[in-house]
Length: 492
Image (tube, rainbow, N blue to C red; front, side):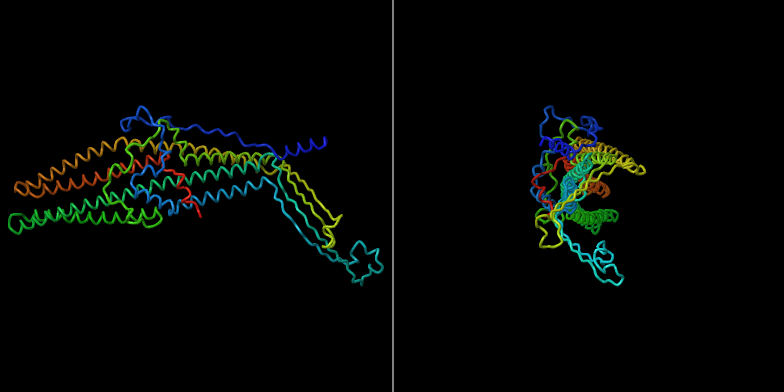
C-alpha cells in the first residue's frame, strides 16, 4: 500500500495537468470616466438615483399598452432574434462537444476473426504427415471471438491544451449569449421607433388632409369670385396650385405610411393587428421624460455588445494556452479489458480474460515552424480582439453621448418650433382676412399657408425625433433587457 501511494499521487498530477493560458487583464476603457458636458447636455441632478437604464425592463419603460403588445409579438415572431437564439444553442452544443474531450471515451467492443490458412503454408506443416506436398488441399480454419470495454487514444491533458480549447468554446458560447441579448435590445428599440414612425405618418397624413380641405374651400371661394368678376385669373391659378400641392403631399404621406407599416410588419414577423397600431397623435407622455444615465461611463461595460466583445477576447486568450501546449510532449492512452476465445460458448469461461494497455508519447522536435506560427497567430488574434473590445466601448460612448446631446436640445428646439407654428398660423389668418377684404392678392395667404404647413410638418418630425432619441438613449445605456421575455424567442 505504501508503494502504491506515490504512484496514485503521480497519476493524479498527470490528470490535473497545468495551464499555459496567459493571465487575463481587462483592458482599460479608452473613454472618459464621465459623460460629456457643455451647452448641448443637460446637467445631471445633484442626487443621482441608484436606478440606471439597464435595470429597467422594456415592459416598464413603454407606457402605451399597444406598443408593449407589439414589442411582445416581435420577440416571438422576429426571425433575426430567432437566428440569434439558435446561434446560442449551437454554440452551447459545440461547447459540450469540446468539454467531452476532457474525459476518456469508454466503449464496448465485440468481434469475430475467422481465417483459413493452407496447411502447407502454416507453421504446423512439418508436424502433419503429407501436409507439405504440393498437391495438398488441406487447410487450417480458426475462429477467435472477443469482447471487451476500453478507450482509445485518450489524451492526458498534461499542459492544459484540451482545457484551454474547452475554455475557448465556453467563452464563445457566452459571447453568442450576449449577442442574443444585444439583438433583443436592438429589436425592442427598432420596433418602438417603427411604431412611433407610423404614429407620426398618421399625424402627417391627417395634417395634409386638413390642409387639403382648407385649400379646396379657398379654391371654391376664389372660383366663385372669379365667376362673379371679383377675383382674377391669377388668384384662381394660385389657389389651384395650393390644392394640387396638397394632393401631391397627400399621395406622398399615404405611400410613406404604407411603406412604414410594411417595415413594422417585417420587424414584428407578422402583420400587426389594427388594434395595436397607434391611433392618436404623438404625445410626450408615451415615454419617460427622464432616463437615468448614471454618473459614470463604466455603465457601458454592462452593455451586451461590450460583454460579447469581452467574451471573444477571453476566448482568444484561452486559445493562446492551447497554442503554447503544442510545444510540449503529449501523452495518450489506449486500454482495453475483456475476454477472447476460439469458441463463442467459451468466451466468458475462466482463463479467457485478455487486456491491452498502450500508452504513447509524442515529443515535438521539428515541424517546420508550424507551432510557432500557430502561437503567433493566436497572439495576433488576441490583440485584434483587444482592439475590437476597445472599439466597442468607444462606439457605445459615442452613441450615448450623441443621444444625451439630442436629449438636451430637442426640448428647446420643439418649444421654439411650436412658437413658430403659432406665429405662422396667426400670419396665415391675417393674410387670409386681408385677401377676403380685397386689401391684398392671394399670393400673401398662399405663402403664409405654405410656411404654416412646412412648420407644422417640422414640428411633427421634431416630436418624433425626440421620442425616438429617448428610445435610442434607453437602448444605448443597455436598457430594454427583460429576463421574463428571453424564453419567448428561444427555439422550441
